[in-house]
Length: 626
Ligand SMILES: Cc1cc2nc3c(=O)[nH]c(=O)nc-3n(C[C@H](O)[C@H](O)[C@H](O)COP(=O)(O)O)c2cc1C
Ligand code: SF4
Ligand code: FES
Image (cartoon, rainbow, N blue to C red; front, side, top):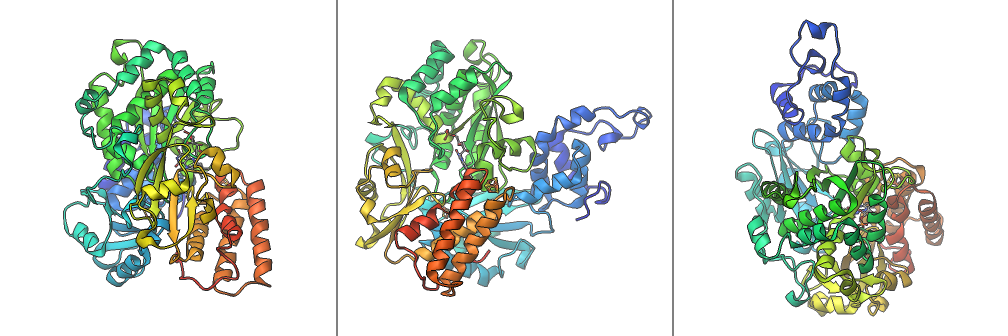
């Protein structure tokens, strides 16, 4: 693509309409509007156009949805409207997997071939797709349809998953899970591709009496704010407004709530730092990017308790003095996006967002931002860049988000599950909450069970339950087979063996065995699963998702994948022992010298597998194709 303004030619009418719908009509010849006499002499509005840079990703998404790829003409037009250099806008468009910068099929089917689905035969579905639609590719294949392999689609409890992305006059995106070739063909044959085909049974499997964060799931109608309020919804916001911001923060600190997004940072400390920062305005972001392979807890909360997420974010905004909240949701979650969009609208109508909330002087509104397929965008500073219309590359820290985050202002970021705890803390009080779990891991935790258990699904348990107890809740290993290993915490987590079964699943408990809870993934593997195949998929995932900004991660993830490929093919360079040593050195360099958590954890699972003896000289494993 030639990246100079004007080379792409004018946008087509549908492209222009798609962009104008996001940015509004152009008002001068400088940004694509009618030429006027004044416009010939004066350039007005440059500052205003640049202030809209944060709309770059939504504008590109609109083009993608309308014509199936970001054409040179459309890119040019977006750049002119926002006064963004074409190379920069192209750099943004090319970053995301749900945007295409080359001509592509109008319908693209994303088929998950990631960890949990691999354990349930994802390769077989991929083979069937290949026989039916040809090799995976984004360019138009048979009947204008193409298919690609996808990392985890966040429906791991279903055993297989696909996502249909359709561009055109009636664009749509919908999930299929469990996915079969027949269901995919059925989805293609009907309508605009926006009807999800999902198993109607609840993904929540834990005993109803033990549910706190999930107490409204499958009880409250997720499409009705009246139903939510009839079940006690918005009483905690009322309580928060009575307590005042300091009172709310006191409760959160007393509860000793630690973040559930992976880093386990104390939430009350974070909130206090933002509230005390005199720089204005403040922002609060709910991180709903959930892209860690094996994780689906946030999706369940958003799809089945959207008002709980909205109320909790409103309380967070109130406590930290923020006027504006963002929910950054992963692009592959169309059903949760629809629920939240509708929920935010209903909350506005009822005066629970906007000016004078609940009749007082608190003002707060929420904007929903959709990601476009990039795991790294879940890292909080990369997320800010994504919202601001830049490439989602992590920033150096410090400054920390509480000092200079979104738009360089003090910003709070919390994971969806962390925010769900806020409602529970205000319901029972921080002191009572702190009695749940252990002193260092208070409250309950959502665990995403998948793989070879009898009843995969979402389980809420009080911190302290052991891995053995959790697996027993899920009915144990399917068919009574022996447990080979468990992947704790997702691709960025680690494998533990059967000897870890009595480990309490607390932050401190898993730390003691050198593991992490991460995003709550518990992927159980029986003795039939080829762990080396999963390792290769993990290595491919990190190589794909590295933003490439720093050398240890950009090069290290490639070398790690190559090394594993050699090992698995039984063709080690030198000896297998030497390859394992190099693997350890690569891990060390990535851990020590990478800017962000992606590079720092990219070798964790592989190294833990080596430590557990799950990989050695290595038998050949099935090819994982890009
Ligand atoms: C590569 C990478 C991806 C991440 N993805 C997510 C994510 O999808 N959701 C999330 O809540 N946190 C994610 N995080 C962690 C965030 O940077 C941040 O710590 C978190 O959102 C803070 O919320 P918490 O304090 O409630 O955990 C990710 C971190 C890294 C390094
Ligand atoms: S560690 Fe990897 S993902 Fe993180 S900034 Fe560096 S290159 Fe990007
Ligand atoms: S949906 Fe396939 S691994 Fe998560």
